[in-house]
Image (cartoon, rainbow, N blue to C red):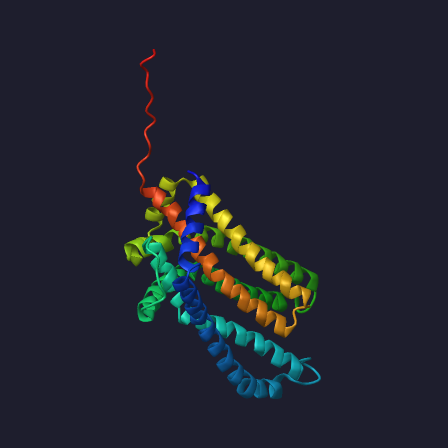
Length: 300
């Protein structure tokens, strides 16, 4: 398998999609389809959290014994508002729908029929939620074990041997991180092909069959598929680190964070299309007939 050819085709597809007049309009539409829900969710959450939730928390938590300050609570709530803004992008998945269309066909997709993109995006979202369920379950189990263990140790030792409780807390945390990370890797390997398979077949049932997905990866070749995932991961990390580095030059000032975060979203739109196109090219190799090695033996 020639990864260079698949990468070159994905680059060409991305250029043909966005680097033209209609493509630039599509690029801007997709940017607005991400930014508008993000800003709307962030703004709504800010109003509710800062003007309704914060006064209640300040009256309860700000005091000489608890150590909270009004400024600290406002700061934490603002981070929560950012998270809610990101959740709004997930709830209005026009970009995910666009990527679903690009995985389904080689034809260049325009950002039109936003109702169709919305429902296509929710197909992708539903599959993502399904694959994330094990990670959520592991987190809840860890939280339950952590709470139960601390309560049991407090009862047994009655405040004595606090070092043992600390050691067990750290041991449980390390175990949780290892299990969560290993589960994430497993989910990512099957989930990426599952997303393309969902876009191509339209069947959620087919996209969650581990045996079916495993058979597809086997036809692709585990080495080639994992290499594809590594390349994709490095590309995404490079873009993210680049913009984080730019923000760090300005000491992560609020204005710099907003500007560079917006620029990162703008750049990630074609990067995301390239990644899905590359992954789709790799997926399609599972359906290619193996080439026969035919040689002429007339000279023997």
